Image 1 (cartoon, helix red, strand yellow):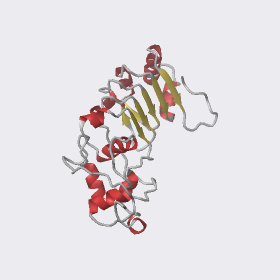
Image 2 (cartoon, rainbow, N blue to C red):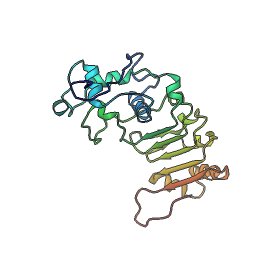
Image 3 (cartoon, one colour):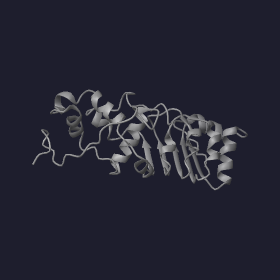
Length: 225
């Protein structure tokens, strides 16, 4: 038996929204990224995009007609989706790259070519205490490394955007790998005596695998590692 007018079976159960939009994070778009990771790992159940829209709107959702624009009611629901400590504690990997599936629940045919879901702050990331792998390829610029220092299990960090507070890397004692793709950082680490180079050298001495690469160079110099 079909679960809705979309013909999709197995309608999920949706919890009632609660709390302030974005909570326990400051940035609603960061919460969306967290939700998406939990959804993709099967911890949060959102169903298919039309199912969620139909639940929130209380009516049939016409993807062909309504899928070309953001549905504010769905965004409001997800911004207040209840997340408990067990859910957040189960998150070990987070990718910020613009490809998260949750965006198509809010805007079915979103093409990723605008800043609608850009993240402005990672404040509250300490609510994900078991995060081990963080990959920031886009969606956030710059990333403030100092906000990552409460993460007691962070092991692998990839950054493909601008970076603030690089010395804070030294305060993340669990790091095993740091990979940065950034022209400015590359210029700094290849300059003798530069503070950023000194940070990377200290990380290497502590056993951290360091890799810093340029984005675009005419002469294609090697990575710093």
